[in-house]
Image (tube, rainbow, N blue to C red; front, side, top):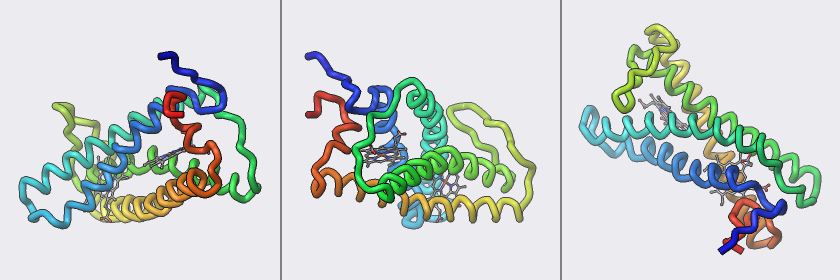
Length: 182
Ligand code: HEM
Ligand code: HEM
């Protein structure tokens, strides 16, 4: 089977990294949504936190590949539509990039400011800041606030895509799928 990576869609690297990031981000949010249902200090809570840190850092790693992919592959031509809609889409996409870059760093900083290191797969990640309780509280608040804004941006993003797919019936979703999906 030949796959047609025609210019009417995003490049295959961009498509691959987009869909790899989706389950990662869902899992990062899910670990935190599930946390309140676990016992304080319990093993399950520790496991959820571990996966939160690990998958959050995987998002940070993936976003660099994403930027590289977007630089190597140009975006497909604009599908048209009102300027405000195109501006909203561009703004949402930019904010999602901010989320993918800033959230993991804020989380890492917040842990370090609390005096906790990040230990992943036998690696001790560098301490970015010294222990400072008030800074830790502030960083945690920013991490929480940005996570809430992230929920809104992701909801807008997904609703816009569903609108395009099922109401406007244009190629928006197909542009982010390999040609074999058509
Ligand atoms: C895309 C990446 C990330 C997202 C979307 C994300 C999202 C979240 C969310 C939704 C919460 C719960 C906020 C609340 O209580 O309302 C949270 C808490 C937290 N996150 Fe992240 N996070 C990310 C990456 C990270 C990373 C990489 C670390 C650390 C290495 C981290 C450390 C923390 C910490 C320490 C908390 C506070 C947990 C507590 O309640 O004690 N996060 N994060
Ligand atoms: C969960 C985390 C998600 C993130 C962080 C995210 C991020 C992005 C970003 C930044 C873009 C702009 C293209 C780029 O630079 O890569 C984009 C485009 C796109 N995303 Fe997502 N996305 C997510 C989830 C989803 C989901 C669940 C869907 C499907 C319902 C979806 C469908 C699309 C489509 C169709 C485009 C192309 C839009 C266009 O051509 O204007 N995304 N996404």
